[in-house]
Image (cartoon, rainbow, N blue to C red; front, side, top):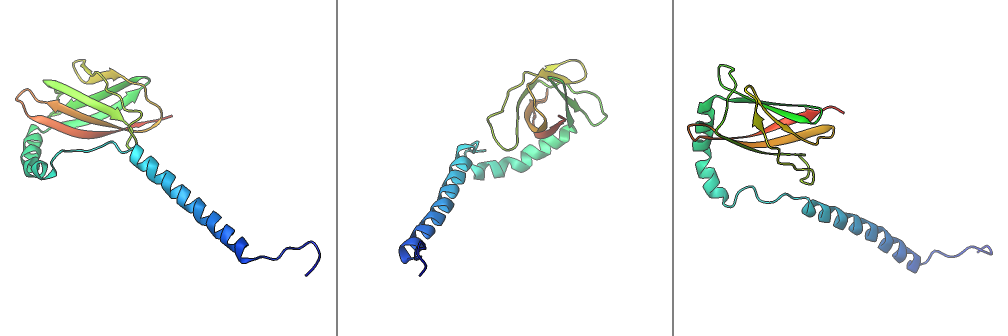
Amino acid sequence: MAKGTREFTGRHMLMVLCGAFGVIISVNLALAYNAVKTFPGLEVKNSYVASQEFDLRRDAQQSLGWSVYASAQENQVTLEISDAEGNPVEVAKLSAILGRATHVKDDQKPEFKFNGTAYVAPADLGPGNWNIRMVARAKNGVEFTQRVILHVRG
């Protein structure tokens, strides 16, 4: 063996393997932690009950014949709800959560006001894809829920 070179021993191989697997395990733990930390939570408390009521809610909602379109300009979100003839709809109650599809840290609860043709609200939006998870109650009491996709250009 030449002077100044060291022999690669089993101990060296063990350190290389432990280091490699240590990196892999550390990355997996970090990814798992972030996945759990950003999970928004349960959608429904009892999935069986929700599934039994789904068809009834869907049929009642479809009987309204509403269409929803969302847009954004500057610091304002517009939510247009129209009936089957294309006329603007004024609902009895409207609540919504505006947020990103991937996490809940940017979620906002805009206070929509009806201006005669659409619902408008101030909102702090950055560029990208946003979701509006809206719940509207028709004047006849039917609940209308929908996730409306909003694209904001940068």
